[in-house]
Image 1: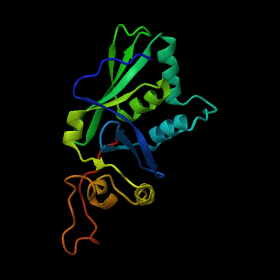
Image 2: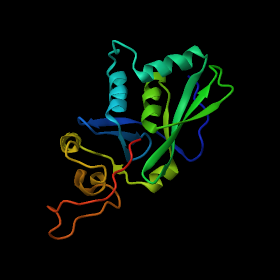
Image 3: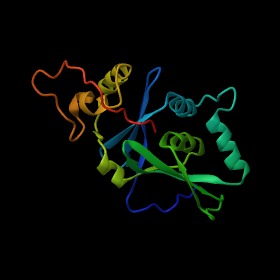
Length: 197
């Protein structure tokens, strides 16, 4: 597929990993030509839709994202790329770039990042994040060891979205708050959870 020209502020990423529990999931998007990894909290159904497609094993019945893929193709369109465009009050925003197969008649469609990524893996198109998203949220830094990923997945079942900033991966995230003396074992009360993408 011929790739569409990108905005100067867009950074291409790929899926680094998906951490899942029974109720929560996080997708890690890895900057291809850089050291940043963006974690985004997503719903377990969307995580399953992404993971199933990446596994290479077809679903016995079309899932919602498979249906949307078929509808877009039947209408003679394709998804050239998806872009995570912004984050506002812990909610991420993204767009699908739909076009005719020859690249003409571009249509931008608003989407949740989780749905956008689920479609990107079905269309085999690139995923981008606008630079301002990296500037407005916490990111992880590569390299991350496999042991850290395993620990992250193990800890996920007991985590709230806000915990990702202060407690994960040994405080590797730039600007992550560090606990003060005697605060390591205190449980945080109240606060608002991040909204799911």
